[in-house]
Length: 215
Ligand SMILES: Cc1cc2nc3c(=O)[nH]c(=O)nc-3n(C[C@H](O)[C@H](O)[C@H](O)COP(=O)(O)O)c2cc1C
Picture 1 (spheres, protein in one colour):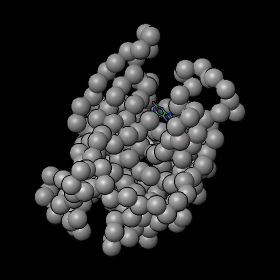
Picture 2 (tube, rainbow, N blue to C red):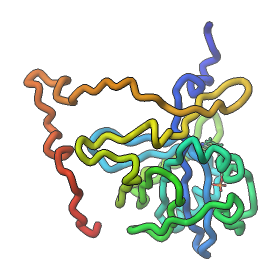
Picture 3 (cartoon, rainbow, N blue to C red):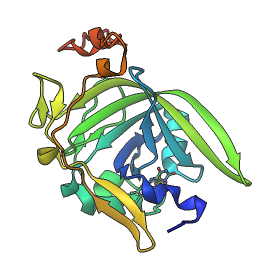
Picture 4 (cartoon, rainbow, N blue to C red):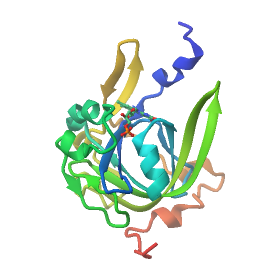
């Protein structure tokens, strides 16, 4: 089956994240974002593609901070309440009946009940236009990264997909098709990509604890 070119996002399973921000006046905001990706390994950068008409964008522009919260499938019913277009002064934690998880390095609170949290400071913002439609590529620098102890295995840095059940989606003509991922129990060391079998970045990944540099 040949599909229309613009349906490319239908064929890439996407994560569903919740981006939490605060306005200059302290109003809490949450929005689901799926166009979120890490920039290479081992940078601490993430890129978020955003439409311009987003309170999330307004808040990131003014406060230069945001939190990317990773929910499990058990939070699927929080997606639509947080995706609704509501006035700027509505606290979306209250609207969606979500509890705040205080952040460590940014003012914006995280969301309690998610399985991982990326506290980010704005690194750069690229205002673009495609076919006359404005959009943004927002680059965030992760300044604090946390995962629920219940799903993380500190022995090998893996995490329990069965327990976390990361909320994902594919797209269809019926709209968003929510799903999760399943382990196929296959691991490969990064070193396998190199002739000498050694991963030049292994020294970074072998560290068990990240020193808190206060940055
Ligand atoms: C599952 C899901 C994923 C979404 N991903 C994005 C995205 O990556 N970029 C974007 O600009 N909007 C995305 N949206 C739309 C915004 O979440 C929605 O417009 C929301 O109302 C924006 O809220 P805000 O104005 O409070 O920022 C997504 C919506 C859903 C339901």
